[in-house]
Length: 200
View (cartoon, rainbow, N blue to C red):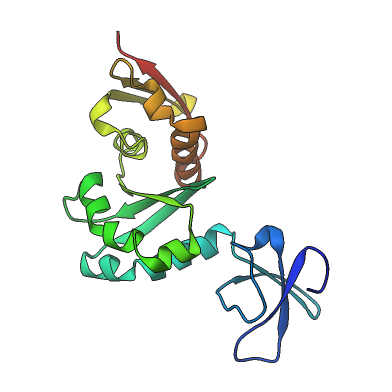
């Protein structure tokens, strides 16, 4: 421990040492543990690692679910993360629904390797659509509860009309479902204000 809030790590196969700040670490470590991390910053001889950057998390998930990605000719378009919810946007030329994609990845998400790296993580796989209205519907997960999506490009706004009693479900616990949908949309097309309304 080089200081009170960082772990001192040897980069395997080299003589180099790096610091993994506890705020960038995925979990607690003890002497002798090994794991993966990405280089966050290099300042002179000081190397700082991270296990929390979006690029690192994406590469790790791609590695852990590489078998179904290859077998079904799928690719990860984007990942939206908020607290312990991971929304993984999947690009495919096949006629897969969100339900199909989650069934394909289910054995891997329940495996030991994913649990090791993301012990509290909840993973949801979502089909990517070019059409913004279809994409918003897909990102909000409960497509069967959504009656219609209207997107106003000039206003950067979308209105989602849901079944009665489904607004809370679409927003999600503490807003997680809506927040992760907006994060993914922001990285693809920019900020879109999403309003969810109940059909009377």
